[in-house]
Length: 210
Figure 1 (cartoon, rainbow, N blue to C red):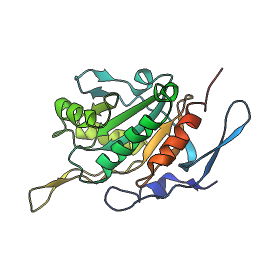
Figure 2 (figure 1 turned 120 degrees about the horizontal axis):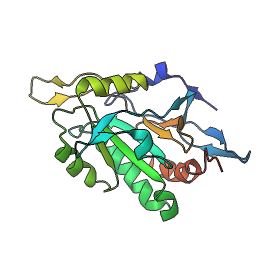
Figure 3 (figure 1 turned 90 degrees about the horizontal axis):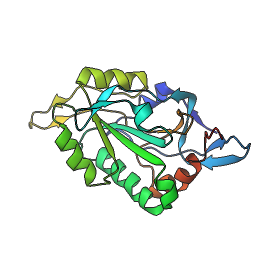
């Protein structure tokens, strides 16, 4: 099993790298082992509350809003030209291939790293292109950056290029929190739809308490 420390993940940012998955072995509560195709974290990460707002402007607590579900958490922005739409499209495609009983146990949360331009309406419209179940979350830039930092996800402030286009450098990893509210595996840019589809049924059976 290859474990990737957070400091190494800090080198994986949007537009700079495409990731290759390593096989990860997870032992569930029954004692059986399942091999995931994501990339292992050196240490499990607790699911944060985030304490941001949803697209309707209501307070958003990640733990309570996704309780009892595997949670895929991604930081990105709607004007992203490559990694963000590709990642959301791949997750949506994977959800379409798994049984409904698995799909119903997955929550996908997208946190905007460009909250000034990504209003609630903008986030909703953009995410609905991929899957109507996707949840958009935003806050002030300082709030979002603090949450990204706490999770070891690199993020820089939006930069206006000479062409007038804004770019936002951010981590490309999708963090997968299982039913015990722990993330032990991430999915890097370039993860294939087949890899997500392979792992989702395993993840929904990981971390069960009963």
